Image (cartoon, helix red, strand yellow):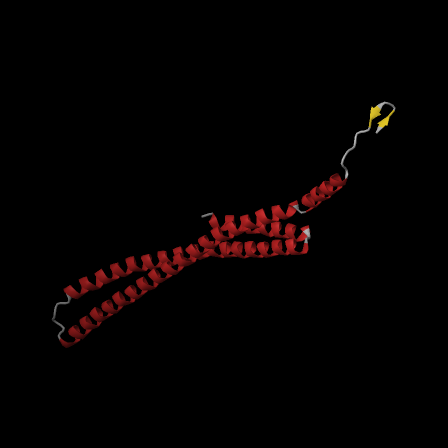
Length: 184
């Protein structure tokens, strides 16, 4: 068709409306991709925090067992020292002229050994406490990340970005706990 000597250009508009609608819906739901990516990141952080929390819990337990073993060893040395002292008193009572120098040397040795064992036990207890102090914030980080993942999933199901934002805030809190638990 010609208008004033020019050919009318026809533009296929029926598909244009559909394309605009699809792109608008794509943009509208593009945040869901970001939710999915951030949720995957949260899962990675939760796994790392969980691994570190488990490590510190195990190390705390191992150190506590070492301390317990050392305290038992300390008690055994204490019993030996008491047996030597009782034997000395008994021998001296039965025969006042009997030399007891060998037993006094044994007693002195037991006392020196007990001090060393006591220090080892106390060091293991302190190390156990340090591992537990690091375990607590790491376990809190795992919890924060898991709740953040759940809330992010709810945001997708309800199509409400507010839940995702709450999930991101919890993720930041989890990162704070992760950092606090990772620092010496």
